[in-house]
Length: 614
Ligand code: G6P
Image 1 (tube, helix red, strand yellow):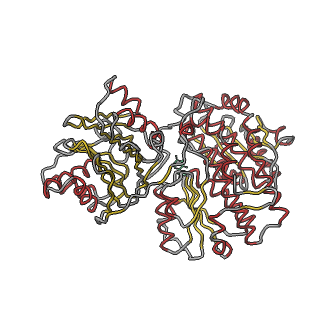
Image 2 (spheres, protein in one colour):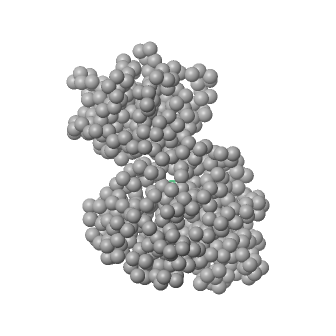
């Protein structure tokens, strides 16, 4: 979390920084700030709130300078206020720094520095680090580049930082460990820095993804130089960006989330394009094909993920066990890594992450690697840390997802995981040719079916209006619809702030049923399939307690429709692919309720899209 930008070049920095911060705001929006070097001074402007609040705070003043840094914060150390906002300055006011990450040993460093006369104004770990850099400079008279390197050698924790010095308008220093950092190399000697490539893409497609424990010196005269914390010089590896600028704009929609929900027919196609041959009934995924033996001989699959990605993992558990007959465990990355789990060399660990930067998922990967397991990454962001850390993987190709609540990334993850399960099943001989052909053809028809479900938008909006003031909501599903119930509940609570719980429908009677009264909306996935009759009984149980039933049913359904207060029909598909279509009404529902309640749909309170702290 926290987004950082930097610019050194021939143009004015401020417009580039502000635009970049708006692109990165999904990473946190507790405060925003910029610092620009101009005529021998470093001007810092910062305040609590969003980037637009910073613009208001500047009240029409446009800070000048061709070297600058900017930050949008997701608070960790110290409450979100003006003082804790970044950039932070050194004690003498010469240096300014932005930081994404956590300096774990900041308290010890702070105490030592206080004993040496340093005075701190904020509660942040970042201010401690910039004072440490200043202290090293004053003690040793090394230049700033070297002082940053030496300071970072003393630091425990995660960081992506950029430092500028009012005495040197020709240089900025950047470094990273665990938090992401990308440097854009413009054709005209301009350099850009971003937590991801989105603030950079409209200026240049040439980028360097910094590796952990690297420190970069960007100098107007000598260009880009990278060394490791151990002072070993590295040759910067310049790659070409693939993202298109239009994908970062709202494109006629009022909210990114709305746009992203509607992009799903396209993003699902992008996800299986080139991987699936419907006529031949084959799947080609190099990440699996190149390691076929590992998958054929795997003892089990362990899926690690957080948030919505974890829900996609739960859907995959049903797919892999049913189709590929491989035992699967799905773990919250944060729990898995601290549990001293048993991991075998013939296990395959699948890490699912939209951003490819989630700290807990990364840490779980590192641990599994130490045990010798094969690590497979399912990421959306190309070039992200997880995609580079894993042994093999498959991108979801959903395109940039900006709304904090994940929508198209979820359906793309489920699509990739379905392809993976089919490919592995084929290799392990656990699926008949007929079933494989059928499932591939069915998967191919999913984008059209999602398009159909999107047509229920007006009906979902009508239902949203009825339940928008609910205090609680229950989501129920069985089989692979259970993770969809979890995802539906998560969507509602994260953007509408209505308490919601997802439950396996049959488990309802072991607790949640006590909550049901005439005020309680109960959203049930009651599509045709092996547990349809059981779900019908669960619905009866809710009705007997006067709960309100909003059911997602297969088109043509009569039984549930007769019982439910409202029902939303979705097209029939193979039972194992239902999650790809049944999740759509839940996405629309939480979107409409959030809009009706006046919530900030794209930037819900307290959340961030990319969680780079543990
Ligand atoms: C945050 C986001 C969620 C996301 C989760 C995991 O909580 O708000 O939308 O599902 O992180 O993120 P990842 O990038 O690893 O999928």
